[in-house]
Image 1 (tube, protein in one colour):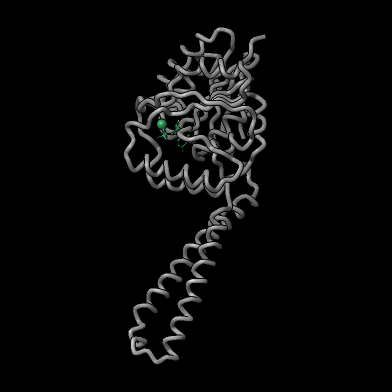
Image 2 (cartoon, protein in one colour):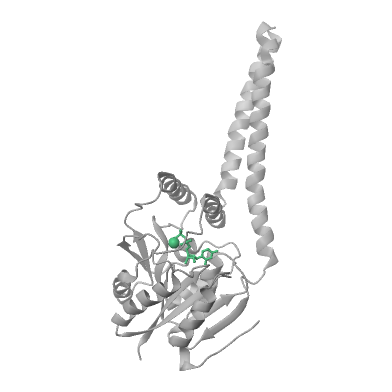
Length: 323
Ligand code: UDP
Ligand code: MG
């Protein structure tokens, strides 16, 4: 029996690209003749025609599976839903906007056949991105790799990757609410390799990520993989405490020697108050980050609810779940 490739693609308001994606991915998958395939589109609460277009595709093609979430949960949760529903022996996770070019899928499959469980698609260049985005991405990798201990995250790898069934099953066991998929795939381990590709520009539609969401995403990524910032807070706290004690000794010395410059102390006082005030705010913020995460995780909510799951793929029958 042929093995099955499941392509998982989350879509949020992608009416301009769904169909183009479908044709392009289908033509690629048809060339890989020794595998059967499923195209699993996850609708992440789109408010445009994405759902209608997917329904049309469902009628047209038995290879389509369609998971529709009850609202917009965000890219990471959509990825989780897609991984939960993909039936393939091997899953390829990619964005629906064709920035992740399907042309390298045969190469990925080749690596899979060599025995790799995870094949990351690494962006060769980040041309077309602003220097600020490149710079912040670089900083993020530096900070992440310096603080995340044993989990080594490859650079310039997004969500585009191939994952074997056993790695998918491992990934599915990680049910945390705050998710950072590319880190989770590293965390589960298994033999991993990467292949390079040129990331294309979006074929149509707009990116859903702006600087605010990027910054939030970076904070998510860091705080879900490391408690190092708490440690840094402690270090900085200790260092500033030592400096403060030294300064106290200096002030005390001036006081007992009756140094006239003591009256000028207002500015140094202000500096110290401001410095410690801001440090406290920063550390409170860091504590708050983690406290918030503990709060969210202890709620133990399901990651998402499904509004519709239609698949004609398996056994050629339509299965509908409404909850
Ligand atoms: N996406 C999603 N839910 C969201 C935002 C984005 O499922 O809330 C999907 C989107 O449809 C696309 C992928 O995630 O398939 C990546 O989004 P986008 O292309 O906007 O990000 P970029 O490539 O600019 O980083
Ligand atoms: Mg994109």
